[in-house]
Length: 363
Image 1 (cartoon, rainbow, N blue to C red):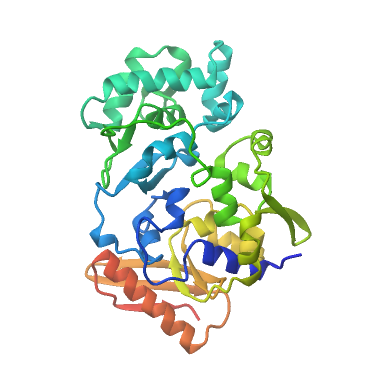
Image 2: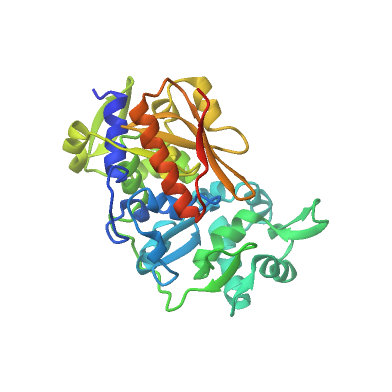
């Protein structure tokens, strides 16, 4: 039996949130991908894990639409293995990942994987030079038949379904140019997908290594994959542990780390940091009111991590030349903790290349 504090400390250590310095090569979260959503997205997630992000460029990093169709950052050197790792496990898995786009394809007798290959082939032909997403989508709408398309009321136009478009880009060997909005697609230079990702980039193993212990359902929810497929590919080298009366799995190689981890650090986690993406939210935040505050339907805040516990939320406040960080603690924070949070707010301001005016603690 393992208590939640051990689980939290294990994840802090596994995700290297307790280190001061690191490199791209040894940053573990890049094995599963770092979601790049919002101004404090992937690069900030790397910064709080000790990576000097000012020294990074497009020769080091690559941005792809992968897990749940979200943009994720990876090491460019790993792209062939990453693309193999994010492939749907089956046709049923592909159907689940593309959501409502699967229904018209099924009605037309078109398989989900076949549909992704069809879209990828056309995308590869269209994107011969850097191309804005809207232009690529518009051209796809002229060459693909009705089952692939939907009418968009806000645009008053016919588009390809969004998720098949996003998931087909990696199959087509396309990346997203960094720091472009709207997104610009381009071919990955020298792209070659490998036949198998290997244990390091296997998504189920990576989830267990970074967000374990976990159940097949939790991993499936993270990937938007069917539980049946995840169970069929569940690793053999796992041990069972009980967390909050729930039996979960952990890679056997991590059993000692789970027992001994001690996550001493203070960090301001971005709203979509991997630490907050775990699908056992009641383990992360047992209080329902606090969980609702951290994961609202719209407009997520960041989270304050102190010594292996989430102790509140934070939001940036920028007005003119002023930049403050508003912290909403969930408990009374002692002076040393407040000073540590202020140090992290200074770090955030430096990352954003602005001067910190102050930290506003709600209580």
